[in-house]
Image (tube, rainbow, N blue to C red; front, side, top):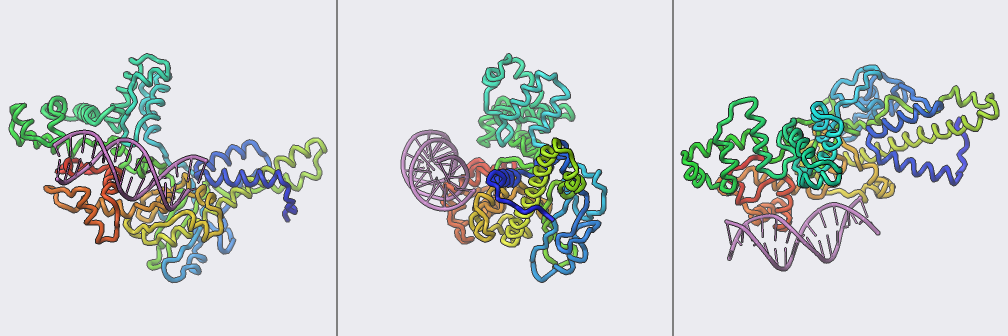
Amino acid sequence: MELVYLPDQRQVTVHLAQTMRLLEMSNADLAVEVAQELDANPALQLVKERLCPHCGRRVRALPCPACLAKHSGDGPIVFLSPRLSGSGFTRGSDEESDFSEDRIPQTESLAEHLLRQVACIVGEAEQRIAANILARLDERGLLTDRPADIAVTLRVPVEAVICVLGVIQRADPSGVATCDLRESLLIQLEVLAEVGAVHPLIRRVLLEEWEPLVKRNYAAIARRLGVALDDVEEVVRFIRCNLTPYPARAWQDTGRVVSYLGRSVYYQPDIAISLNPCPGGPLIVEVFTGLAGVLRVDPVIKSGLAEMAEVDKVEWAEYIERAGLLAKCVQQRGNTMRRIAEIIVVEQVAFVLGGDVDLKPLTRSVLAGRLCLHESTVSRAVANKTAALPNGRIVPLSIFFDRSLAVRDAVQSIIRKEPRAAPFSDTQIVELLKPQGYNVARRTVAKYRQMLGILPANLRGREVPA
DNA sequence: CTATGGCACGGATT
DNA sequence: AATCCGTGCCATAG
């Protein structure tokens, strides 16, 4: 039996602040936070068991088969099964793997990925420089700041910065941290040349004929370099197939990180939506807690409190209070997340099952209204969290509130489908969108194009696909 | 003259 | 109150 809750003003405030803070955190961060508290607070206990959220029974694996059948109603209704052990994203079988095996999958940002490589090569002082450089990369993976400026802020010689820069640029997604596209391509080519033979003409074209190359003036290049037009086109083909204008994406495409509007998001979902194994059944939504069990106040300590010496009592009561608070907040966080996830999935079933085009506009405030929560609560819950879709995509939760994703997708498919020889101008795209029910300004299409990393029409003839 | 990108404004959203 | 987003206007490049 729980203690009677007295609305002590202080405790209420602490409780609120704590709830808010936890809600804002991703599962990964929460796991760290809880681990620290477990170390520091002897009254806090992590019980490693799994309880079915519906029948309350201890089960070997979630979702609980009995309840899954019972709750398998008609249509695409959501079945929620908060999985206790949620740090590992394992698709399909969720068999009773012991908790010790709660491996945390590699979650690296591009910067971390690069830093790890660089650290093997350079010394500690240089690592500091590298870290600073990596923090400045833009969404394309290019470095817009000048080496001199970096040297000044770090108070190191410029030569040192340039040296580290050289190492980074040749690391895994080669061509990152360069100042412009041309330099990036040159580095990529250089790295490529180390593994295989590369035609010397390619380098020459990049170095000497950059301007005409971006303008697609191949004839002029051929003339000036005294080679056949076919050779130049061969060069262009090679560049298109083997080099990328967005070095950061080359790495993201490997799937370790998802990119959304230029921001990189960690590949470790807080929520997973998967198809029901029995066909036609409802979707399965799992809300992970990031913890390998449930938190509670250690009952032994709690009951032993009465027998303790007076001096220790105060200290232990403090521990118990803190532990109870955290356990409660974590639980509440899970509850909120679950309720929000439920509505989101119900609202956006089409998107979850289909594609970007099917996303319908949804705002945080209507969701808040539906759940009788404050808007800021929803905002916090949605921030910094990701969901795994049935098709394997990992997306930030905020994507469900994106007003223009559907339109952007439409723009992309229009551009992808239409003639190579005569690319659509932005104005034409506006007209083509109208019959699909999208009324947007020309300027807006331009912005979407940029977001999607698609070149303007006049440069689009036959360039690298995004 | 047409197609784009930059700047900035206003309204909605958080 | 701060931020984001769509859009209009204008300068610039071809």
